[in-house]
Length: 254
Image (tube, rainbow, N blue to C red; front, side, top):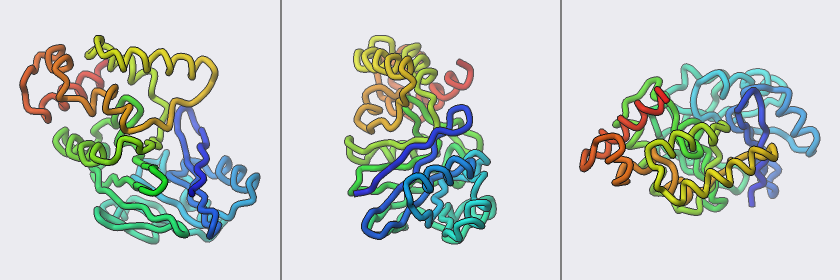
């Protein structure tokens, strides 16, 4: 079983160490900064062997080259964005798999936030590392992709088992939830979840990881089929891509 350690950095980023105990191989997902990563692996006595990148933004690849120089590790990243991933060694795409010791992850191509974004699903560990594609009650801004691309990407990930743990890259849950309430205020699961979120944050605790099943009940970007959302935004019965696009537009201006 994988051991996954969350490392908070910057204002709201999360990095993730993934340790495979049988082999001792250890990966860091989307390292923004080197110092917190080095401190954590040294504290635990682990040997850092891999970097796993989801996309090219600086707060996901900022420590790639420094960590590679220090540890001589292997950097895995999106084939579609290979020219923007510092130090990349292995390029992967939809349908590929990566291994960390005995652990295997399926790669999903999920453009929308960026044109080359990918996600990694370790099925046996029920762990999805999706970068900035799905957030807790949110999704990434469409910097390089279209609403149709992002809705297709999210739909692809939403087909994974409900028990899948979503290890997203930012602590945006409170703001995301407040927006979700503005367009689906009668969603009882959402109201209850926001009470839980408020309690966690009041005690300085993270709201991530979340589960895919919980996101399906409370995340408006996974819920364009909701009659209440469609009514609130004036798109009752509309195509789901159009509903998704309007929800994203409203969140951008919330």
